[in-house]
Amino acid sequence: TTAGDSIAIRLDITGLGPGRNPNMNDLDLFLMDATGRLIEGSDRGLNSQSELINRRLPAGTYVVEVRSFYTKAETSEKVFSSGDYRLSIIAQ
Image (cartoon, rainbow, N blue to C red; front, top):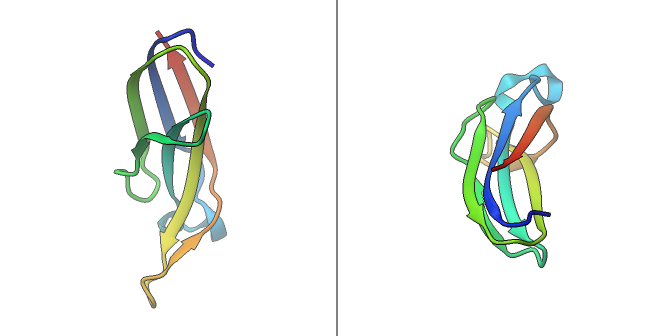
């Protein structure tokens, strides 16, 4: 919940991901309003890379979601998994 101002949300990968394999640790970051409507996402980073959202928000309640997946080489199918990360949120 914020009183309205600029925020910075940063997601840093802190581990190797499932099976201790860095190629299976592509975490993405999403910011949504209280109803679940997507405001902004950051999925530019590759395996083990950080994600960042900088945004000016009106006063209100928001949800931050971290999603994790990798693409299976044999089938190009997305496989959802888990990973280790640090999430930092700074309101200014």
